Length: 232
Image (cartoon, rainbow, N blue to C red):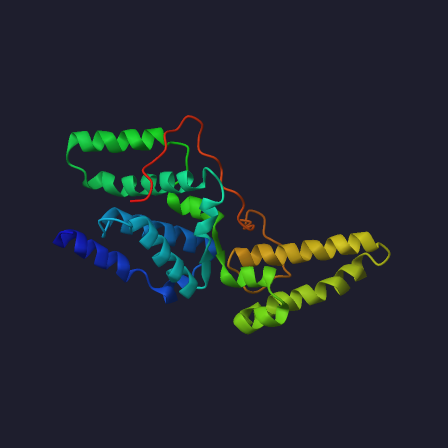
């Protein structure tokens, strides 16, 4: 790397502060970590292994900030890695465009962006694989274990424990409706935890407020689109 690239790398790494990232909700964290990854990939600090190194680095950074990035999810489907590399290339090329001076290089970048149009850039794609670690604990761990690791989950469990009595008071003679009501209440708590919230779980979701569900399978690559460069 030349001196300019080293300076840019230092500035990017300076923004990688777990304490600052920890204060972000899930949507903002995903945007920030995706942008950070793309900036580092643009600098391309290593001759080889940049993709593997950046996944390990951002995964560790996310854990220290209270989030989990399930990078392995992109390996579980035949098109998963292609989606990831297309998203990466779109984001890196957008960063590169303002700095390109040679017309032929610019044309290659524009052609790549045109070919991959309709696919998501990296920050958007990462919405499929980023969740707060406490949300995963609430979903998968026994209550005592989850609270030991994440004491801030106490309001979520308090709301969950109060749900059966509240629902029963509203529908005293309908067991099936009560069951459905409790299930809906727990689902609402999980949705709010996925979004990065830690309190006010009993309030109704405000109209227009984004709903953050657990990540689902990524959308497929646009039919007929060429595959991107892979590991680099």
